[in-house]
Amino acid sequence: MTLTRPTPEAADASGSIRRPGAGRAAALLALAALGALIPLFGPSAALRGTGEAAAPGDGGIALLRAVLFLALCVPAGEFLVRGLARSVPGAPAVAPRSWAPYAAAAGFVAALGLASVVATGNLVPHSLAEVDVGGLYASRDGKLALVEVNAFLAAGLCAVSRRPAGQLWPLAAVVVTEALRAHPPTEHTPLLGSGLTVVHLTCAALWTGGLLHVLRTLRRWGPGETGAALFGLYARVAAVLLASITATGVCSSLRRMPPETILDQLTTTAYGRTLLAKVILVLAVAVLALWARIRLRRAARPLTACAPARAEVVVLAAVVVVSGLLTALPLPIRW
Image 1: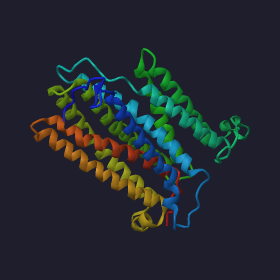
Image 2: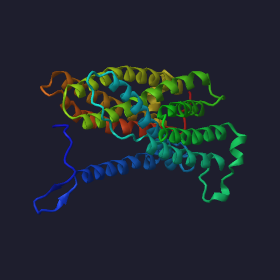
Image 3: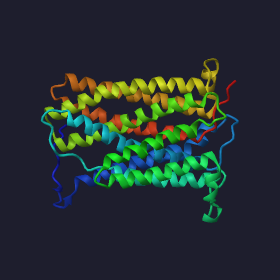
Image 4: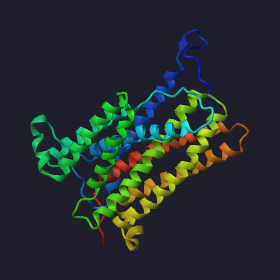
């Protein structure tokens, strides 16, 4: 495996022109389609046999929230890796094209869709006439939904401006808003829950988006010591992020499901089943990450670590999608 950039066009055996990027784009579209099946059909699978009631439009809500989370990951990862790249001696000046504007557009559409659901009383609107935009200002959830819509709009404007670093502030607002939305004032110790969610979501976005941008950067830089150095820097940061994600995830799970009931609820509630699936995926990510780090340190060509890292970023995206599914499921009962 090499990281040298392929030629834009190549001729196949019949003499016709083949574009290498077309196959990569088709693979990405196929993965995106498969990923969309998780939130669309996940609620019915998770709720089967639990006796819990499904919320209206839970599949669509889970999909929109998954898109929103993924839209956070892309710009967060770009900022992290660009900062790491500046500390690599002799790093090439070239960098991959930013995907932040596209991520902001996707996040804006997802936030707008979620706001329309809130504006109809947490029901899926069937026409624009059913959406009460003014009613969003009358409720806590409505105000939080408006903040997310405006934050992604501001992030997109900053991303295409001369000061793209300005998008960090609206993106931080989205993270805080999501944390507040997930922990309403009626919950036990909502500020603690919101704080855990802020750290968890921030670290997850940096880890997922960071690995994606590392792989894109290495493809531009080509094989060499600078690429291995960048990958090594990211690996050290990712280890800290994984530890933070694990700690906050465990604490949040224990708040939702007390220790004496967690084993039972992991198999008998939709939330618990989905959480268990997320834990399994995170374990798979950890194994792939360890494999990549071993290759990076011991292989004759350190950048062969990109092979397991590509699989890692795909599974990380699945973890983010499953996290979106979790937000659309009924919370477990505190027995």
